[in-house]
Length: 93
Image (tube, rainbow, N blue to C red; front, side, top):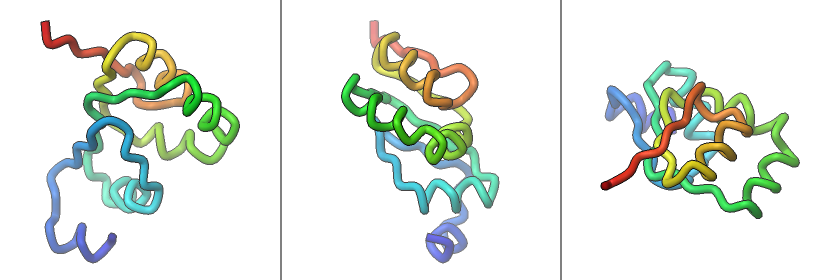
């Protein structure tokens, strides 16, 4: 991961839906690359699992600079887990 980031030198990283790869996210955060999650969704079942291990995931989730959730329920679950300061919903309407 470190070598790939050094080679490509991204200005920002945008993830889609819920691709959570801790090693990659730690490396991105270490390099202070802006990190965004778009079209995010988080089922109630996944939320329970992440919440159980929140002490491990909260620092990773807090490193996101912005989150676009599919709906308000997903946004609220993401907020509870510590994603970005203000996850927001995005409507195509």
